[in-house]
Each structure stands twice: as C-alpha cells, then as structure tokens.
Image (cartoon, rainbow, N blue to C red):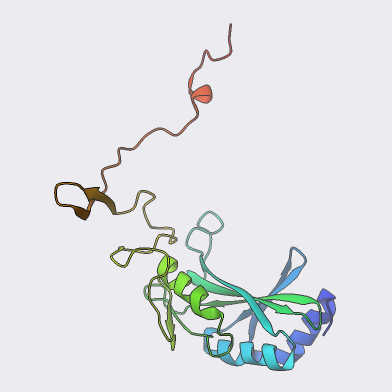
Length: 196
C-alpha cells in the first residue's frame, strides 16, 4: 500500500473484495463503506494485513437531514478514522446501523482498546448501542439525562433543565422554561440603522 490514493483504492478493492459496499474519494482522503455485518472482519484485516495500525478517531453521524432531507439511506453511521504510520496513509471506514429506530453495531474495543471512550461518546450523544462493549454508559451527559443531544430531532433547548434549589438544598430537574427569542442581530433588524 502507498499513500497515493489511486494505489490505495486499487489495493483496498482487491484486499477487501465483497466486504465493500462502496468507496468515495474526497478532501484528499479515501472513505470505504463497509456492511455492518462485516465490520469486525474488515477492521481486523485492515489492521493486520494492510498496516492501518492506529484508530485515531471514531464518530457518530446522523444523516436524517443530510442533503436538505434528500438522503434515502440508513440514518445512523459510525466513521472510523484509521492511520497507517508505515505507509503514511489515512483511511476513513464508514458503516451504517441497520435499524434506524434502535441503532446497534458491534464494538471494536477488542481491535483497538482506544475505541472504548469514543464508543461511549457515540452512545451518549447519538444513542448508538455497541454490542460487546465492556462498559457502555454515558460519558458526557448526566446519568439522568433524557435523550441523545446530537440527534437531528433533539430539540435545541432540550427537554428538561437542571438548577440548584436553595430551599431544598439540592439539584432539581424541571421542564424547560426558556422563552423563544429572536436571534437575528440588532443591526439587521433595525431598518434605520446606519441611515443618518
């Protein structure tokens, strides 16, 4: 394998064969799309046979409003960002969860232990469940938090707010009481601004 994208593309197509669901090139990097059922085999093969020894990131994606709602594929995906120091190459591997209502994928913590906290983050913010994860629980939001804040259908103001009640001397949760407001800058709202 080499850092040249056409060589990398050809090598990965030969190496992965029927495991690939697609391949895209953009921003100087290659993205391969892999079927969810084959993700563990593919990532293990990329690590052991192709020299992608490091996973540098894992992130969730919600495609529900992608392309102004024109997206027709599965809603949730996980993108693995791999690095080969040996070949001086980067690779993105994307896989889609089969069920949009209960997104679930296999954990890659046995392949790359660093995936532990990344998968917890995707679980917390997108609600993607990773089967086989050793300790899948929230990592960024409070344990009592309701919902997944990075989903496109999550309200901007949230569902509940938390505040300290001095009378009860504890933190309490209550329904959001934020009044909608206009967020257009004042300069744009005032028709006479700057006209002297």
